[in-house]
Amino acid sequence: MNRKVVLASRPDGVPTAANFRLVQAPVPELADGAVLIATDYLSIDAFIRTTLDDRPGFHGQAELEAPVMALGVGRVVASRFPGLAEGDSVFGPIGAQTHAVMPGGMYRKLPAGDLPPKTWLGLLGMTTGLTAYVGMLTVGEVVSGDTVVVSAAAGAVGSVACQLAKIAGARVIGIAGGSAKCDFLVNTLGCDGAVDYKADDAGAQLAAHAPNGVNVFFDNVGGEILDAVLLQLAPGARVVLCGAISQYNRMGEVRGPVNYLKIAERNASMRGFTVDRYAGDFARMEADIVRWSGEAKLTMPEHVVTGIENFPTALGMLFNGGHRGKLLVAP
Ligand SMILES: NC(=O)c1ccc[n+]([C@@H]2O[C@H](COP(=O)([O-])OP(=O)(O)OC[C@H]3O[C@@H](n4cnc5c(N)ncnc54)[C@H](OP(=O)(O)O)[C@@H]3O)[C@@H](O)[C@H]2O)c1
Image (cartoon, rainbow, N blue to C red; front, side, top):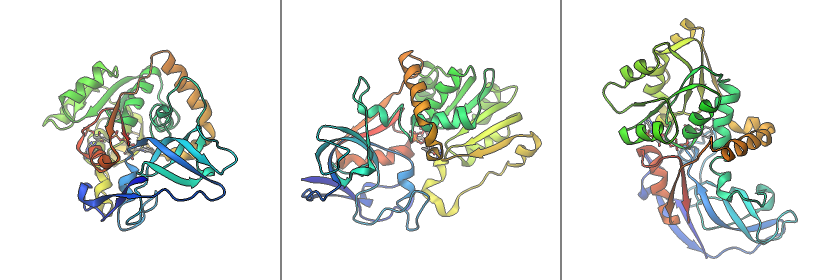
């Protein structure tokens, strides 16, 4: 039997358990070219929220009563696809379910070796480690001596982005909510400073940490945090638009930056990216990440939520700050 979390109603604001339903159904027969995958881990990604609205978003639109979209890793249980065999580990669009029957061509066969398959959701994950790599090193062009600020720094992308900036020789200031996460940024991730955006003096904290201005801002949050950092830009700064999680629960009324004139005044630039656009460079990036991980320069803390029925709770954690590092569901 397959246990799947389907969309029962479209959320208004932060998704709640009432927007989803757990359904049990027999696993369908395999057609030619299809594979049956048993899910090991699902990646809880911010883009999932943008698929739940009543109008299609950049990543498409979830259908009511269909399993919620999610990337994951799993094992092939049965295959009628020539490129995959029983026992293979795969990465791809599995959905919020314990078992998936899909065209085999939608999955990447993961190499056998020392790395656990869930690494391809975390450090090597397209939506995590590779996103941080593209944003910080390719788009942000961080160099030694830069002062770098990362928002949602204690989350999945942010954790890797901070560490990549340290590897490049930058001074790194992370922004996160609460003193425990700020301690985590400094003591676990090696940031040089941390700003608690939930504190009253967040703007002053930022100014104190970057007295000569911010050279690279890697933004995962948007809204008020983007505006606060724009005020602190150094001449020639690069603002990298990775995401805007503060806006995803109200995509119909996205708040743009009020302080955008600072981009002109500081001769700065603001550049967004989508990670898939850089797929041609993934092999090189993966090799770098594996090497730095082996040298203990990169770590990926994980928060694993157990039980497919807890998928909605995990999705909500993206917005209430309940995790550090990579958020996963193990069904
Ligand atoms: N450009 C691309 O191709 C690409 C690819 C993948 C992901 N992304 C983006 O990367 C960003 C991070 O995604 P992720 O999967 O790594 O999530 P994550 O950082 O692990 O989780 C989201 C974090 O955002 C913070 N947050 C939530 N609502 C907030 C708000 N209103 N104000 C300030 N902080 C808030 C929370 O941390 P606190 O406890 O600190 O509030 C939470 O832990 C997202 O914006 C996502 O869209 C972009």
